[in-house]
Structure formats: structure tokens, C-alpha cells
Length: 358
Image (cartoon, rainbow, N blue to C red):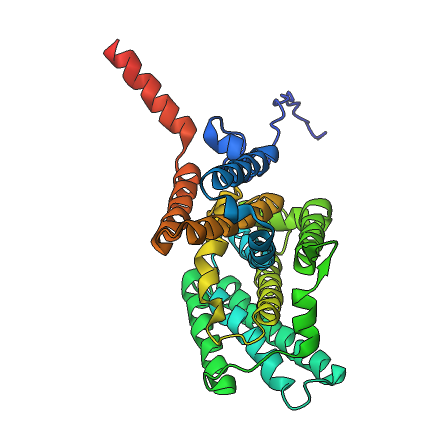
């Protein structure tokens, strides 16, 4: 018998375009979209910094003097480097509490491993290698704990901070030692009357911004931070980008710590204690969401300048240092509020309430 074929009507279904994976806050209206846009955070923090300088010039003109600016810019550059590292981690939805330990340990390693031959360039290069190698290993361990073992970032990094401080005390015994002369000369050197650290911070910021914003690695990096599950579904190995964030951040902390040691010339084993809160505040003021996703690295650098000048103004006017901490804490709270609220749902709820009461 001949086989009977059944004809079925082919019904074409309307094609559905998959929704693109975007960072938290993108596509929404209201303040969250403004802060998530490319120009919003940079323009906002730049305007705030300009207002701070103008305001400081009015109430304390000495805060804008040549000596004051020369003393402020190197510390702003160091905070910018440390904050860039914190931004990389926060872009991946984490937070790094090992900043104080890494900033302190890097200077201690350079000082103590070059102490026997302080004028020999070979010993300084070797000490720098040890410092950056220790930073890379610390970042790798933190990244593995967070990405592979699924330890909460706050737990993994606070444990790493304790480990780094333990190594710090083991090496230094809590006694400061002067940095090599070449590092101190570089940290305190100037070009055209501006500290060399400012040029270095700008150069490092350009490199990090280029890698994150203009390369395939950077696009994948931001996609993982925005939505790691969707990135894995798209074939991206999310874990390696999370590990890269912690390793890159630790290297930036180490660079900041070494330069800070050169600036101080006799660095304290606890010199990094003052860089944890400011690095988080600079990241938030720069418009990076504490929930991960796209970050604005240029705005982070400007925010570091803002916070350092704020500290300068506080010290100049004789106000309590608690005022500075209040501003830093307020910046973090505002950042959490802006990115934590779903403004679209909030506006919808207000609209429904207005209709019901009308």
C-alpha cells in the first residue's frame, strides 16, 4: 500500500528577539538611568569637585595655595589607583576589604627586602617583584574563593586582609623602615611643578579604561558583572573575569601602597588603614553600582580628587575629621539608595496610588 503523507500547515510564529543583557539600571528611567549613563556620573562628580574647590577657596583660601595643592595631589593620585582597583571588584558584584592589608604589606615588602642594600638598584627591582607577586597571589586566592568556592566576597576579603596583616607583622615586627631612595625620589618628584604621581595615576587610569571599555575582554568583563548567569549561558567563562578583577585590583593596591611608602619615606605598617572607606566612597561617587555591572572608571578618578580635597578642606578649616567620615558614609548610603531602588516600579506605584485617590 502506498504510504499516505499528511500535510500539515506550517504556521509562522512571530520571531521574538532576545532581550539583551544590560547592567543594573540600564533601560530604566529616572535617576538610575542618569547615573548608569556614560556621561552622567563623570559630569556630576566633576561639577561637585568644581563646586568644592570654589567653596573651599571662599571659606579657606589657604586650601588652594601652592603648598596645599602640592601636598594634596600625590595623595589624590594614590587614592585614585586604589579606587580603580576597588571599582573593578565592585563591577563584579563584590567588595574588597583587603585594601588596608595589601596597601600596607606592599610597602613593607619593598622596604624590608631592599634594606640590606638600599642603594643597589637590583635589590629594589627584586623587592618590587616580590611585592607585586604577593599582590597577584593574594588577589588570585580571593578570586578563587569568591568564584569557585562561592565564599561571600566580604568574608573572603576580610579573611585575606587578616592574612596580609599577619604577614606584615611577621616581616616588619611592627617597626617602620625607610623606603629605598629611588622610590622616594620618584614619589616626591615633579614635572612642570606637578607631582609625578598625578601623571602616573592618569596614565594607569587610561590603560584600565581602555582595557575595560575598548576590548573584547572588557566587554565580557562588564557583561559578567551585569549578569553572570546570562554571561555563562552566552558561553562566557564568568569565573576567569571575576578572578581577573581581584588580581588586577590587588596589583593596583600594591602600586598605591609602594608609592605611598615612597611619599611618606618612613611608611607605617598600618598605612593602608585610611584607604578602605575612601576607595568604596570614590567608587560609589563615580557612579558604579554596588550591585555590579558597568562602572565609570574616569568618574572614580575624579571622585578620588574630590574626597582628597574634601579632607584637605576639613584639615585646613580645623573641623573635626568626623566630618570627612560623615561625607564618605553618606556617599556610600546615597549610592546604595540610588542603585537599590527600582525607580520604574516606584513610579508605577505612585501613579496607581494617585489614580486610586483621584
